[in-house]
Amino acid sequence: MIRRLCACLPTASQEIVLKAMASTFGSELRHPRVLAHTPLKVELERCPRTSKPQLRIGNIVAPVNQPQHPALVPHVSFHDMPMHVLLLQELLQDYVVGENMLLIGPQGVGST
Image (cartoon, rainbow, N blue to C red; front, side, top):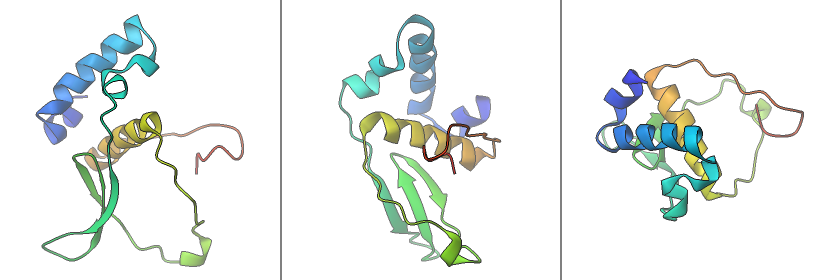
């Protein structure tokens, strides 16, 4: 949690506290950002310094690596629903700071 705070300040500290309160005292659907309808944008852009592609979700940015075998990467259609984008931003924060992640679920739910 500390690494996420350091990588994503200043608003991340407020978000983490609010998320902890929401998970303890209420549903994630009542998360303040979702209630406020603050849309996060999912953007694929070029880095101004290196011209390499990068992914931006809200204020979190990560480089996009080119696959060795592009034919093996599935093409998906992404529909940005506010709660899903919020969860993707949190996953991207963990990825940027080097946290391990394990996504589990039944077949076809998008855990790959």
